Length: 142
Image 1 (cartoon, rainbow, N blue to C red):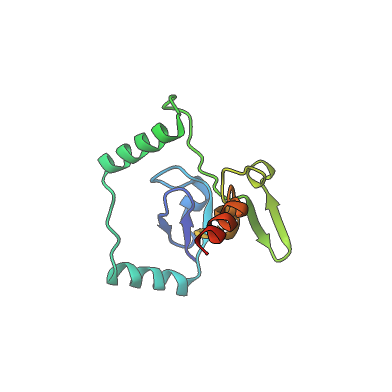
Image 2: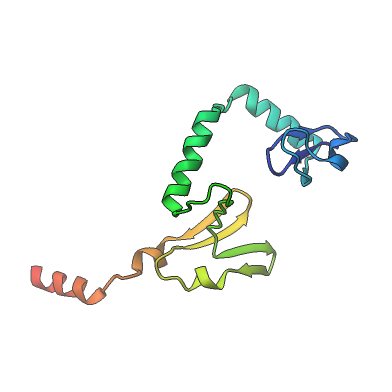
C-alpha cells in the first residue's frame, strides 16, 4: 500500500524503510496513505496532462515575494498561510479560527479538505456595503 510524503509529495512504495526513517528527499516523517487505484489514477493523469515543474529559481522568487507581501524579514522564520476561518473536520465537527472568523477585512473561508475550499462571497461582498446609498441612487434615477 503506497504512501505519499505530506511535505514534498513524493510517492513511497509499500513496506519501504522511508516510512519509518523519513523521506529521503525532504526528511519528512508524515505520510498520506494512498490506495493503489488512486495512485494509478494520479500516475495516468500525470502522463496525460504533465504538470510543469517549477525551477529552483522560481521557488526562491515565489518565496521571496510571499515574504515581502507578508512583511516577514527573517529568512529563517517559516511562512504559514492558513486561509480558512472554518475547517470541516468531519460531519458535524468543525475547527473555528475565532480571530479570522470575526475579522471583517477577510472573507469567510471554509476548508472542506486539502485543496477544497468554500468562500462566502455574499458576506464578503456585503461587508462595507451601505444599502441606503443604493436606495438613494435608485430613487434619484426614477
